[in-house]
Image (cartoon, rainbow, N blue to C red; front, side, top):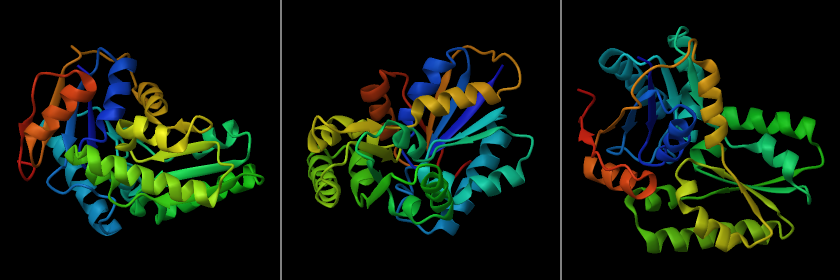
Length: 263
């Protein structure tokens, strides 16, 4: 049996899980939403790194995972390097803002990036952006820390999601009126894609990384994956909130379990 662990600060990583299930229908997935501490984007990088390490150890010890997907941009930026050092035999796939595809697709050479403050402030993001500046020097990057948006999506607050989406996208467009490509730099944001697209207008293409992460996960699995396609949904906080989100966005009706402090 092949079991892949997936974790995020909350429900945002379900956007990645959706793509993973489509790419690897026979694999068993254990999804952990750390929603007792969501969102990660406003927390110190050191805390996110330590929490990511604890979750990874727990998934290995309790669920015997064969690979790990860090389905959170903030956790990837803060902790994936240390996770790989601590677990060299474990294939670990992270998510990061899709700057490279955006640079290839933009026609106006004006690209916006919506992400959490933690992601945009990270050294990993800075290195990624610098590489793209060298390979695509004509592209201009316009970043916006979408403070509050992940939390609004996490709690299902539609009014706040609409308001914050309009606020953050409008700020980007005011900065770069010719912007034609917008990177969704948080796994929560695809679940607000309709609101983001409406705020951005028809001339702006939205880019996220879920499909690329799924392909990469398929590639790093050593052998032909086996399993029953089972999905286990676990939460450190409100399990019903996770189950409701999974039903709304994935059509998943099996419910979720609260595990508390990684028991």
